Image (cartoon, rainbow, N blue to C red; front, side, top):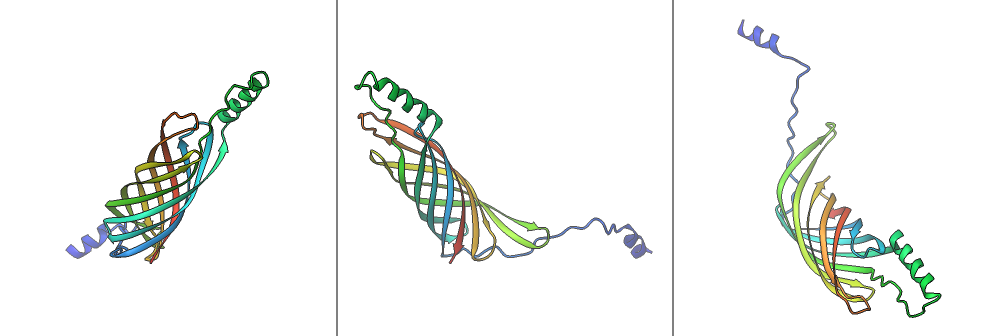
Length: 203
């Protein structure tokens, strides 16, 4: 009678699926990847996009060190065009009027460290299991500008999805800062927000 009552109480529409799959092994493994990103902030007269590559060495699933390189593509912003056009109009009658100093970024080199304290898994429509890590990162390096080079530093957070044991994707948001030195001899603090999307290969 007890078995009949328990069987009658079962609701076949109410099921719970448990994700049972080991995490992607990341002990002493290299990861190489490419990424694309947009930059907010910095020189107000330019719009900047980054295309770059990175390499990371994972000591274990919680820590890694790496290096990154970004090549920057720059276009003149609407504010930059307005200021440049205004300056050219004034220079028609006053040749001593200075042109705006646009000090765009050429490329960036960074050394980084990352810490992965939060870990989870996703079941994608019962077709695949994806592991993800939320991580914090920081680093420093050199940024090459139209006027020369400067020391730069960065920090932020991201989400890494380990699709398979050899393939990964990353979403990352970070702050980057440096001081530039335009040709007029001044010094300005530049504060950037960098958003990137990348894919990687675990070796």
